[in-house]
Amino acid sequence: MKAYAVVDLRVLGNYDWRLSERNVWKVERLLLEWPHRPIRSSKARERRWRIRYRAFREAHDYKPWKFYPRRDRWTELPADVRRRG
Image 1 (spheres, rainbow, N blue to C red):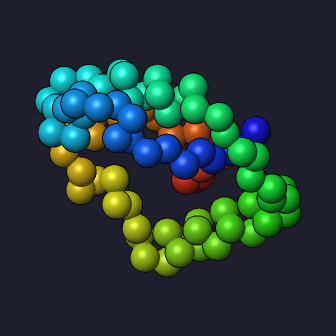
Image 2: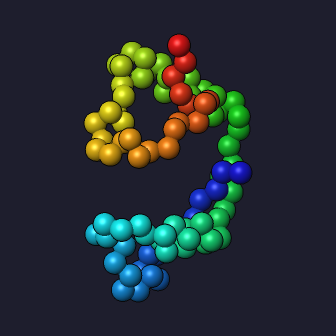
């Protein structure tokens, strides 16, 4: 299910999550546990956006992830998002 939540991170108090060089699991737990509202969408709309995105990426050889440092630590893209071929 796709969902969203609006969270005021000030509820974390003095927890220094913005400039921390360590893991910020407390923030992750808060975001995962906060009540979420479903996002209403259709599979057809999602397919159209994926097709549009892939066409843009193909036309511009667009690979923004290659410019980010430490990308070797990223998890693999889901199969339905990965470029085929």
